[in-house]
Amino acid sequence: MTLDKTDKKLINLLQKDSKQTTKQLSIQLNLSVTAVYERIKKLEKEKVIEKYVAIINKNKIEKSFLVFCHIKLVQHSKEYVITFEREILKLEEVSECFHVSGDYDYVLKIYVKDMDAYRDFMVTKLTAIKYIGSTHSIFTIGKVKNTTSINV
Image (tube, rainbow, N blue to C red; front, side):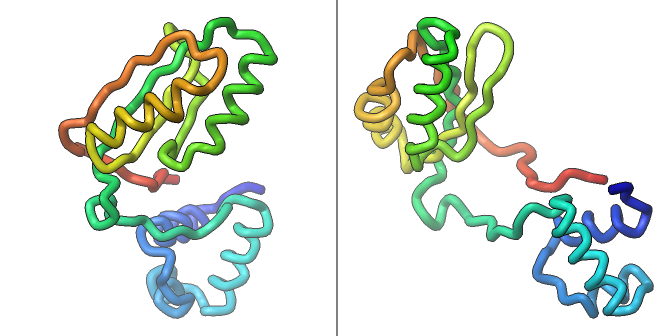
């Protein structure tokens, strides 16, 4: 699917606020409500828009302590990779996990209540996963930029 200028503008508008009505979007795009609706359905059908979500204030749910944890496996074999990835998917504290190049094999984005909760998570859950050789944790001090939007 090739995105035209209007599709791109529509995507950017939806990323800012996906709860806008098709009428509100139609005014901003200078299109009919039906045309906007059809474009949205096409973007969804083509999986350009994968899903709609609510972004939660982490402070309100006591999950404001953000840690980036680098993981190095004992060995980078298929069995170890599959086992680690299967187990990491079960950990609710891990919001994102990336298989990366460089000195470490994975980078995890972890939200917990505080340092004590992170220590408990590390001791009882993360390091219980087989084949982890080493970890390196980075604790965030403050948020400079954090967005879910990708400008198209």
